[in-house]
Length: 208
Image (cartoon, rainbow, N blue to C red; front, side, top):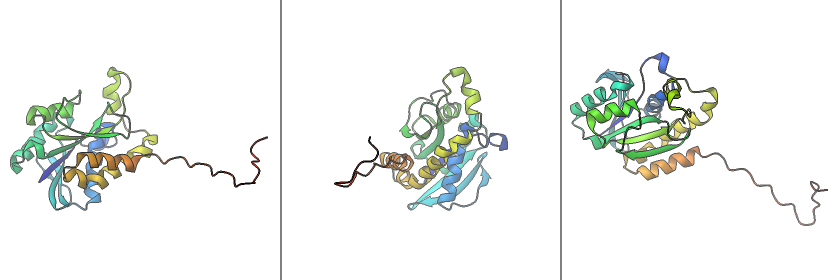
């Protein structure tokens, strides 16, 4: 069984915040793979389902970002899951908007949700880092992540969330590289069309 955690803050005031991309990814994942309904448990919302024959519990902690580890550790203890079977979906300032990386372990990079998880669980969980870009100034970070996505962000945000859900069976199978490659392929901008060469003997009217 895998425990998949989407990080964010509960409540309508935070629903469209950049910091809540983990919640958004969890919602799309649950819908795409026809999981059961969300219900309250472990100081969180949880939904159960399966992908590729593997059982999953997807959760959105309601302890607010800074105390995420409290809810996740309660679920892990109850389910008797090792930390290695936890996958965390979260926003990443150090990646460009729409980019994605998967890593296991490492520092929290100033992310308070990850700091809380590290303090309760250690660092051996897998992280799906979804890029939201950086405001360019450390003093602006808090306001940036707690601000709603801009309208223009929809152009990369929706394809990214869809790609994460579509490619997630590879994550479940333990193929992190395959998961990243599929997401990158699905979110790559379309290649510009090349102009067809003029037919032999046909004048090129574009030149004078």
